[in-house]
Length: 236
Length: 142
Image 1 (tube, each protein chain N blue to C red):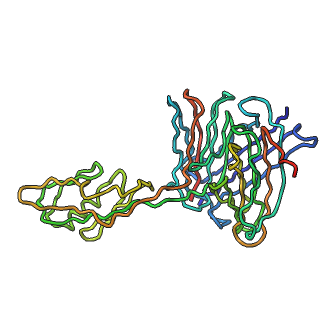
Image 2: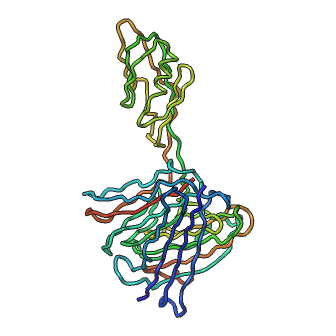
């Protein structure tokens, strides 16, 4: 665990007839604790926005942090042109505009969605050297045993999926929660190149549709010319 | 015009070992929308929330759309079980734990952009807030 302190000082000598001056300080801890500090972070980052036409970027996905955790987000518009701003959205809800030099610091619920899953079961008779491809990953069978081939599939690193294996069945779980409207993965997405006389199969079953997250943080710049945003996520 | 500043500091000596964290930007001056003219409207207060009261609107979006506004809220409870749900209309932003604060920009983009707060956990949760505004329309007389 780490010790992270965040403080704010608000002051004005002429907004009111009396001076406005107050300060608050917090030690950032995990939800419901006082002694366990937040210990995970994306690190301090700087993201450039230069797109014509203007395009939004998803700064943080809810999958990046613990749902209902004591997550904190820091944002700062590094522009020095007074009229330039970033519009900050939580999911589809606009929070506000961050003008040049402005910063924000707020808790983030990181409300997760559901990740699509499916099971692919290796079957039939395999010949060493046969291949199967999914998600851009090509696996070459180094065994004739279906359990061995399933283990090979599980050992791969898929760009969009994580895996676990049990006997000849490999369970795939999407890395991101997305609502595709339908189950997107089917047996036809697995391309097997069989050797002559082989009847190797990889059959998809138990596919379950995902649902989208509902608190991704999205940012939209106000101009097409270059703008930079400094940001950091501290999370559970 | 007024000069009102907000100064942030985030520090940690051990979050990333060997590389102490010290976010210490210059104090930001709160300007009216897209200008270098200081904000002159403020609404400050303090209150107490109970779980039974459900979600309450801390502030209605009664200003002009697409303007600069800032919201400060602090959960001043010292009970670690006490946290406040912070939302904008139907969207939950996050949970503000005891002795935690937030500072965010707020666009009163439409009538459905109210800042709402809701106590979680039983008991009474004290809070304080300040809202700095570019424009504001007082509620109509009844």
